[in-house]
Image 1 (cartoon, one colour):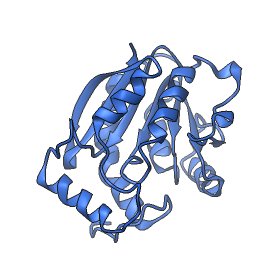
Image 2 (cartoon, one colour):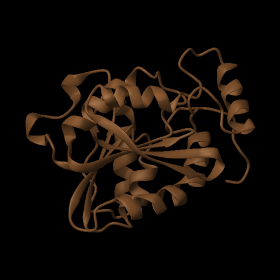
Image 3 (cartoon, helix red, strand yellow):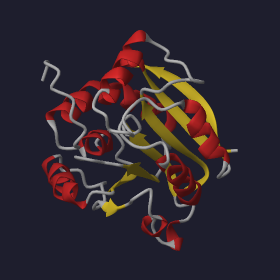
Image 4 (cartoon, rainbow, N blue to C red):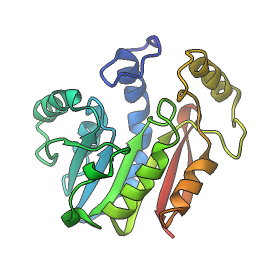
Length: 216
């Protein structure tokens, strides 16, 4: 779809589909550089409709992908897309709520993932989930594993482009307390609490960033 739909963060909305179709190719380029070249396991946090994980999985036959979300109502859509795309390297979706440590898999999953990615969540999610995200990543990732967080962010308190500042104002105009661009500095602080560090900031199209975190 070419026309930008009205802002709606629901994972099954036309707006989210529009944004996902716009950003999936650039993110794929980063994943091709960062994901393991041999067998491995990759987890997506906040998979939503499943559009991203199903698009990516078809490009990495050697990797096994694991969708997760806090909202179980999206699971049927994820499974439908997996079936429609004939992706046999995607597991069934699992409930993962970054505010509930009891949902962060069992002890057997410790250090069992090579990569975790999370796309376009922080502009509509509270920054407080960053602590859970980093603790969860520290538990699940192996020693060389990475956490990739994609989206628009402020950097050290400033907007890097006028369009990002306008987007922040648009989000803030909805009077939803958690909506708005978060600061990379706050993610770094949360990461440090759990032995994680920001390894790389990659400039992406449409004034977004791919933030690459790993163990310190």
